[in-house]
Length: 330
Image 1 (tube, helix red, strand yellow):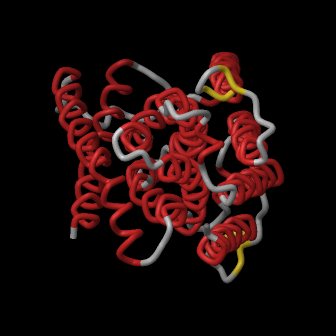
Image 2 (image 1 turned 135 degrees about the vertical axis):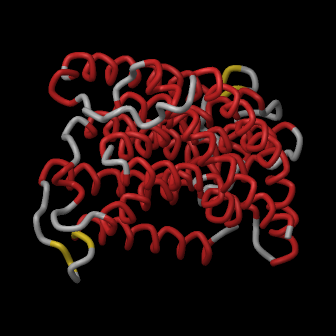
């Protein structure tokens, strides 16, 4: 029941927070893709940030923090399957702009850095400065470089890709949107602090380890805002905003690992987590690669008249990742 309450709280507050962010973006005159990558991605990733911080500081459960971040990346990419299923006619990858490959590529690099260091640190050959792993500095630099590079690309191609959408919130003011944003954030913070303890108790009660719970259940719950805002943006006709939100959330989730490492004072965080998290990292990298193939190749055929083969590959990879984690968790 406690877990269900957390789900309900994030499920209600998350979409409300995303809508407020969308209003703020509209009132400030920001473009759709940039809104998805920066504003919506950071907003919808707020649960992962709060859960990671509370997991390493209050609950002392680094597996929950890292599992949630990497599991959310896998779950976010699986949401592309939902978009492709909702898209009637041509594949969703034929409508999306090729520019998403840039943020997806940076996602592969950042997730790869985390996955590699999970294995290195557990093998005792990782480097660190004090209690902070060397990878944290690399993640921060790469994340800043990604934001700068994508910003420059968006600025250069703005005239070609800015979405022309009529004002959707004429009845709302910027002040009111900011108020709704603050209220939604407060509820998500409260649920985010509570959720790691509930996940830990659930793991003991059900006989699961924190790795499995953190990677699948908690990641799915904290990705509810991404799912809600992505589907909402899609229904508004802002497909690029929806995809940019998912890919931007993955970048932000890897930055959260760096934040968690700084807050975790018992040593580099990746040296205190299960090596099985490398499976989630590799799965996310493979899924991102599949998405890049779809964005560049733009397939026409759809399997079973419902989804494209790119989405089918993403779905299969998600199932494989879930199965491996469940069977081989430590």
